[in-house]
Length: 135
Image (cartoon, rainbow, N blue to C red; front, side, top):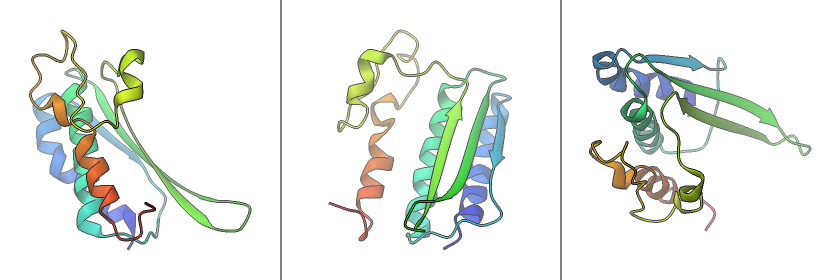
């Protein structure tokens, strides 16, 4: 599957929420990025990540999706996707726990944001569910 249209779909789905906060959605994408994956699962992971960026970015902020294709020494291609935002970030003390099930960063700033418990868990579960994911 080509990842680029899937990224575009995810951005279009999150755009209405971003517009309510005047958050700019940006993308830096190659023309094509072919991967072996289940499109609906990849789309849901991207929606979760982009939506989290919108959720935590301040009004007038920005969420950026960057995809790059690289080749390693064995000529195997890899695709890297980065979703960044201008939000508050994750405190250093919480970084070791971001992939723990049901772990949520709890600070005064996040206490009023609904859904902080599942910030990373949904994308992790969906990625692990792919049949080619290394176990």
